[in-house]
Image 1 (spheres, rainbow, N blue to C red):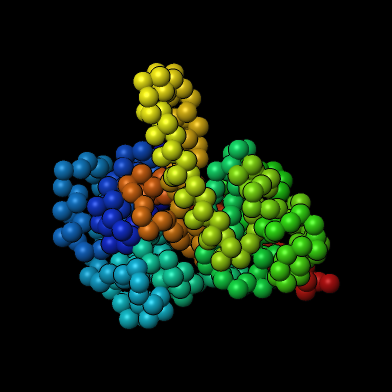
Image 2: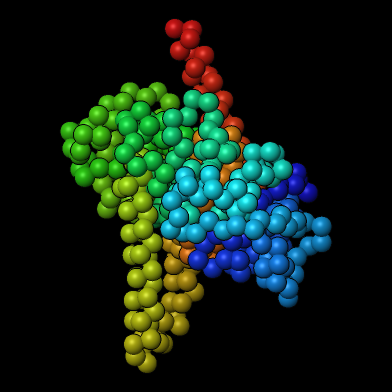
Length: 342
């Protein structure tokens, strides 16, 4: 057994808390003996959800937190005003070194604000982006940023490209990640002011393999390994991706049961179809890490069920062992030293 990874889980955040976060966290314990889970939230509610479930003895800890940050609350006000919330308490566990990672499906803005205010950014990181893996025909790609840095500047996107490349190399073992700039056309002169300004900067960056602009329709085909964009566009892409996948799945199921003949055909293709559809199920890839922090913070969807919590907690082991944020820190230190020696 390797080193134990302590994962704090926000048991009160998300649409289905505390039932789904608790269930998913305990399922992760059954799947990997390197994990210790810290359930953060109202202790009596957590224990109620734990009753009837099974988990390994000695690998679950409950940290009582009496307040809850609701989805619609203003992030800064919530972080400052609810010090005893599950979200703030969980982030402080990471900051103090009592947890190696924090997972939440709660208020996205509060996770972003709290991550940067409590866990804090690595020195030299301008913005900390959210970076989810998305399924494509060629495997998975990284979408960066998908919701943290609206109205980013060109320098931010260049740094996103570098951090995304480090992530794909260390976590997904892509030797030379292809970086694409999300745009409305393939030509270098296309796009809004931000795209036009950042294109030559990405082209000149020696630390990435920039392949140029990528249109949204080429994303599912796996045109790049890292898709760079600012948060507004990234979030729209992610939500559309999830919505289209869910709609297609529903229509396929409807078609397979539309007639006796279709049902017979459905039985024949079911094994292959099930495998293919599973590959395009975004919940299977866990959450989105907030890159560039001094500790590990991972955000899952607000409507996450136990399966996504399970996968996200398991994902934290790989994040921790590969030390992506540590590698980002080392890169920035090397870059700073190079500038000082010029």
